[in-house]
Image (cartoon, rainbow, N blue to C red):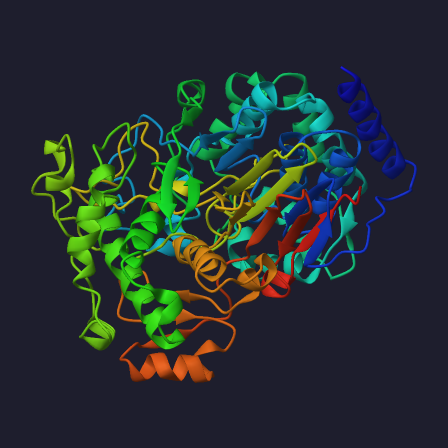
Length: 594
């Protein structure tokens, strides 16, 4: 009770400080910080600061994670928010338990494989802007229930207390940074098609200037309403506004592209359930790694790649050959991901087979000393893990899933938190594409997701659209336990590149013995069973990149891959928080120095 009272006071102080023109004072922000009383890392200094303030007031990691996530909904609204979903992994120190919460968006009852077909021609609509910026793309959001369930089960503060700092920030406003402005600019054509989005994010018809003040009183109103009664989102006025927006998108008089309405109903919102699922557990070289199960494929696919790599002594190989093994393991794991993984309520995925040592031994024979032959056309085929199941899954026998173009959004956000008691949260949340559907719910200030575009619109396919199904995700919030008792939490945004980013961080930590900040900052390599392997940070021009090219790998440079954060708790209780030094404008890591 004492913690609840203290935190209530802190929430009120922050809110009142802003409202009387004393804006939130940010501590010096950096991409790495060391302390012992708690740690927070996010992509934004304001969210990180609010998380740290909660910890300093006596709150736990769950309280701080929800408060930071709500703040990101204000200052990072094009990556995540209350109109989306996500996956939260929690470690509770007192009972040494890992809990995973599935708040993934869910398809309405009207969903079908043909949902994205042009009603005039019957052909599949262009992905952008027609599929992503439509009512059809919007899934039932799960973020709010994730927050309420996490706080009710594992937190120490109320939802109202956790949301108070974000409410104050939304009302008083915050300084627009370069990332916020550039994300609006990149989506200006889409945002301009919807009157509610245009009015909020395109003042005077243009993106806001860097350094100007952005306010969102409608989002503050939404947070207040759900803080009083979360049911208002699923059964009350906010739910009615969501349904109205989906069924009748608020387009301008002459939108620049056709915007198709969706068929979401209040019954779809009311039918949404949050799932607390069994975590995926991977034992790798004495480390225990825990992450989300399906409908997230992140930990399963990453875990399968680790099982393949376990048969090689990567530390003794020269670095080009070690990375060659990593790239080819990713290629194989992604081939199996496409063929077998989907929502567990609909698909009997052969997870035990995919993660078995025997299946890894079989597939590992396909990993050579050079890139798979074929150059830009190289592509692995799915294997057959069914014989390695103790209970084979007959529903998948004979399915050869089509290789669908990867349209999973590269946005999303990830935050990591640890508290003084040793509790840890690794939380990835999203509205899918940068800017989601592009549709702000009029009068309520939040963008709706376009998560249903993560489905593969073909049958038979384990990720085909179906009523009340959750699209397969790549999110991979991870908590790992080292042999010496060190606890490491990390994750990243980035669509399907999330899997390779998290796998790369794990490899740098475990195999190459890099500290968490260097593992996050290192150049990224992403092979997702395509002919090219994407890299960032100018890696293709380095000596190591050129050595991989000499092994037959086709490296494709991209501006950046992911925007990771991480936290480490050592046996002596010292903590490190780490964020990106430069990707997505650089993140913010802070600790409580006790």
